[in-house]
Length: 249
Length: 338
Image (cartoon, rainbow over the protein chains, first blue to last red):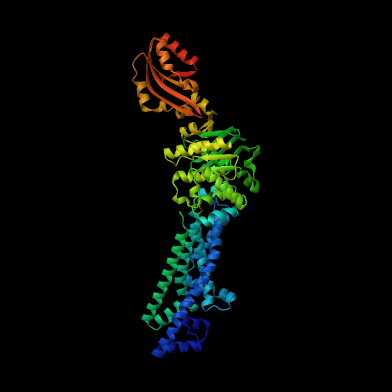
């Protein structure tokens, strides 16, 4: 049986396991415990990468679409629709106002509908994606707005269709900014995933909580933090590198 | 080719509506290089934006080959736009695309074949002298080179009309001269019609065949450059064309002139610019003449000499001398009253 956290057990109503979990906190044999950890820490890292990876993928997909919609429907935009833009903007603000911890619990039913369960690494992808989309959309919108009006007008005046403007001008010209936005969102998701881990999401957050916090294992907490720092650094470095490669300005 | 009829455009501002174009009418014939000059706020950029349909006019018509482009929408508007090339003050190039791709842009959106694009872009880069820069990104180019890319792009889809909106205003004087020479060459070689928006008289003189002087959203004077230049009807036009009038030294000379001294401005146009009038006048008439300032320049290919003269003499002799100038085709007018 995989190690499950207090809240997981609490939420899923596995009371027997919960009792064992609590007593295990006191009586666990040290050697068994460490070998167990050696197996769980790498697995937890993989779980975190898995959650963040898929959540990022979906967030990028939806975020780029919503961000692009925000961009093109703004007043004076390629498909100007100020009222729609305003409503969408308000919806996004609402989404961004909900604290992530609350959001996870709110989307439990949705997670159960989509992946069949509300706990574990796969289930966490749902709240992570939903939390990232509004943020991502705003980041994308900002990146697109970095483009000067002039370059869009040059394309319009050359007789480009809105589709051609988006595909041949807006996206290629804002590519470096978009990649920076992706990087920002992915890093946000890494920290969010830790939070999800505490509430039954699995991954590094779960380990940090159930060992580091619930069992007072500061050393494990430190390991988890080091792994998280490494993950963030890798993402930031890679993102910056790609963004710079794409930027010819 | 292009006919603008009673065009009006106003912008909403916090201080109420601002009339940018007021009942503007102008006709541009095929092959003309038609300049629009005015101070900032005169409405010339609004006019350029209306012609390129980047902005919608409130009233009036813009007929391009007889078709009112203000009424076009969708695909037909895009087709009309492809007949016009725009050159911008700030170039507006794709910064993440190479020089080649920038020039190819209008061709790609028009769905031309790869071979056609390759041939046309190569040809254009040769025209603007950037063959070697084909694969570089605009960031590495100088302002003048960027504008050459802009010009090549504007010409790419073989437009019938090229609109240059302050195309040289962001460039230094040397580069401006080179770009103007390039535009002149293109106009001569291709016969394409140009609309040139500028606030610099030198651009009009060096490039244009026709000019419209704009002020407060209206065209206050228009005609061939040489005509408007030599016989401006409005003060604004005069200020633009005769720099001598506005220079401080000139003003001082008029203010501090001695009694009985008169100051004139003489314009020698075309052939007369090369003849030795001053010598003739001094020999023929009993007057004293000194030259306060003088210049000679080429205006749409015609030589125009301009002299500010201080003349002393008896009234009748003076009048005869003036008459002598006039019958020889020199435009001379007293500027004492200034």
